[in-house]
Image (cartoon, rainbow, N blue to C red):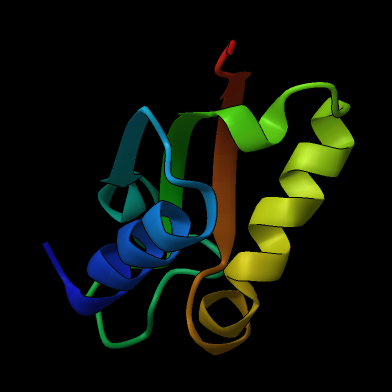
Length: 91
């Protein structure tokens, strides 16, 4: 697990207190593609599956915007692609 993977998971846990979260570095599937790290170190393409009460009653786009806002620094620095699957945790 690299530093960006750890940052993404930590920030999402702090922001949303999820009941479930999985962060996966998918960079190895994108080697040589646009957005792949020139240094070959990965951590440019991630998948996130997250379930939290914070997403209840919001649209898919609202939930994604909330996640992108939390991860703005990572996206501006290195993360090129983020696949997001959100589930609202029921009360």
